[in-house]
Structure formats: structure tokens, C-alpha cells
Length: 142
Image 1 (cartoon, rainbow, N blue to C red):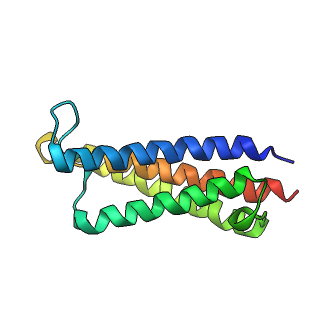
Image 2 (cartoon, rainbow, N blue to C red):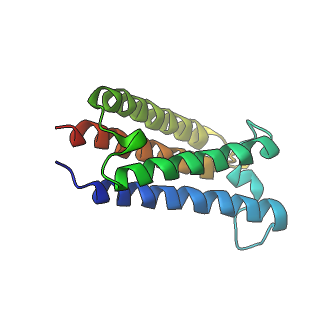
């Protein structure tokens, strides 16, 4: 049986990366420090930022709950369900593959038209988090 703390540690690390990304974007939105990339690198503009930020905070809350449930040995949302794990694993692969395609499209643009590379990286972080949670479901049951 997998050790819950190992999965929780990986998930907590990926969660911490995402939290840093959200905090970095807030700092840039409010202060625009020169030591951080400009807002155009943090934000693709698909959603207005006042709408995006609460969604990111909601993601952080949900991811925190998922991580804590795994750390507790599989309670709540982390009660092992292999079928759910298989679906989430597939979704994590599709999500990550979509970001690879997005990155290739980004690279093919002329440098002066490129923007928002940070979201691509952090969508891969979210896909990795989903993968770890899926793997927990698949391995913890057996």
C-alpha cells in the first residue's frame, strides 16, 4: 500500500508552487516590481483577472482539501476509488498534452507576439497535481 505522506508531500509541493504563482501574479497586478515578469507573462487574458483570481483561490482551497485528505490516509475526497483514479489519470494526461500543444504554438509565434508563458508552466503543475491524486486513488486501494 502506498504511503499517504509521500503522495501528500508531492501534492503539497505542487500546491505550494501554484500558491506562489497566484501570489506572484497578485504582486505584479498591484505593484509591478521590476524583479518579477510583467503581467503579460503571467496572464493569458482568457478570463478577466478579477474573475480569474477568485477561481485560483478556489483551486487552492480544493487542492488543500485533497492534499489533507490524502495525508490523513485516504479520508473524504481521497477515499481510494480506483475507477475515479483511472479517469483522473486520463484527464491529467489530456490536460498536460494540451499544454504541450499550447507551448508549441507559443514557440511558433514571433518573439514580439509571445506572451503568457507562466500559465503554461503552471497548468502543467496542475496536471501533475491531478496525476498524483489520481495515482493515489489507483494505488491506495490495492
